[in-house]
Length: 132
Image (cartoon, rainbow, N blue to C red; front, side):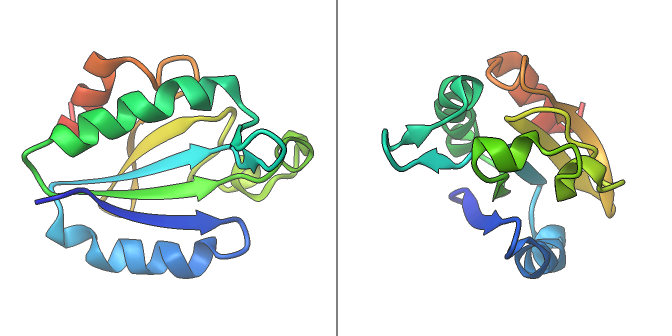
């Protein structure tokens, strides 16, 4: 089964997240990838760690034999993300500190996470997807 992907922004997150949660029981792994927005002047993410991690994460998830759902949640531009009151920084479910952050969502809670400095490491992505 191919990887199922949904995209959300801060503004659209609640509705998309509700759909993601309602379909979670159908998948072996449900992951949320918090990412920086694309800079329109370069057509690349403004976050170098995101540029490094995204292709590795997608490669690993697309190669998974299991049903995997991925919700890509875009945090906004750099000034928006840098605000200490950013909604996902202060959200008790996510407590984001950096991007990219890849979390495993299971039983209505975060069951594992890879922070920005480790989200590009293949063996850690494998372990997170496997629930280890």
